[in-house]
Image (cartoon, rainbow, N blue to C red):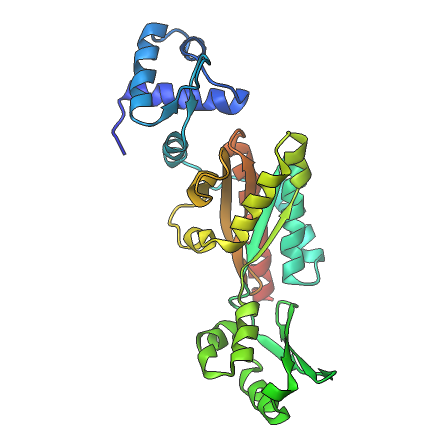
Length: 317
């Protein structure tokens, strides 16, 4: 990415913050007012044109002012230092929700719902039971089909239907004896050694679960429901999850243009990673780029801290 002068950095930062506040293109006069007349509007216009030529800004046709591109947002977030800050009362609130949940997945759902209601934005959460243990395997038979299910230590139950012609009770007993008490991730890595229907069952158990809450807040802002559905569909099917889980930075920010091939524009995802009672995943916000990152991240850090501290406390006990 191109190197910016100190003046360009200050002008670009000011423009982005004004755009976050207003949601409208920002003119040179607006920036001049915001920085107290440090530079003239003519000087600022010259720098804005240079930033536009470098791909940081766009200038809408027949509209005064400019707005930041994805490249500008990426620069902005990469240059902000977000220390893990949180309000202890928020951590306490999240902990109470987590401790009242009977199962780990239910705890994540409660956290996601609370994030949405507290910041009035659409929240999301994912989890994979990577550290879950297989507690039991059942296989009742109904109408010439076996319902083969795995009960996980997270409280989840995952099942497949298998025709009786593909299976025998001895095979079921042998598989059950070989998987009970073992980590799901270990079985997943060796699933090719099992019958195809059991490999399918293990694949289902290891799929990324995506949950969302607060879609009504986006609808209230006039966002089209079709775009919401498209974005959520991509979240559930794309490889974005793996990219986030191996990202070195945290919080992690992704822009909708980067994983929808431009089909959904001007949206972003801001997430933090967590681990809790055998689950690993992310929690975060999905929505228009026009909201204050500081306010959002304080809530996400509080939720992350609550999830991981309750996990540590449970392990000590």
